[in-house]
Amino acid sequence: MIDLCAIRKLQITLRQFEEELKNETGLSFNDAMLLCAVNKGIYEPSALAKELELSPSRLTRVLDSMENRDLIQRELSSSDRRSMKVTLSKKGRKMVEDYSCSGISIPADLAFTQNKTNL
Image (tube, rainbow, N blue to C red; front, side, top):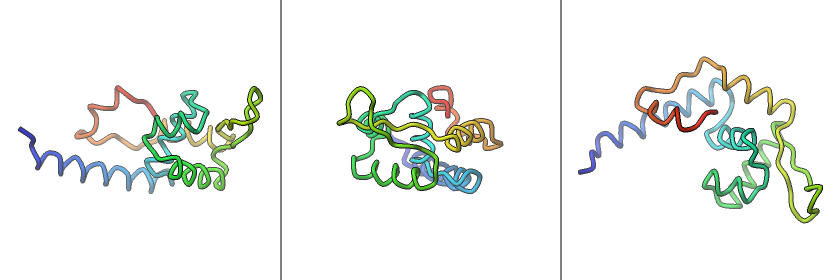
């Protein structure tokens, strides 16, 4: 049986955590997950969209925002000029380092996932 109250508590906890993340780092979940994915070596937009479960149009908006904030760079692939590659800028690498070591703690209700993915 599904415990709807527990699901609601998770939803509230997740929303509060995202707000704390935004206040501490200026990053939304999508921003943070994009930085994490690129840091893990996922560079192609189609692979990023799949990893983050974002539509191509939503991913483009996230990439535009992050590029405007100088957190990522988009460049043509050296092996295939038809494809693009997303990389972390110097500021983006620093952001990954900073938020990976920040004082933000994962709420206990969400901590069970912490071992599966590392920011």
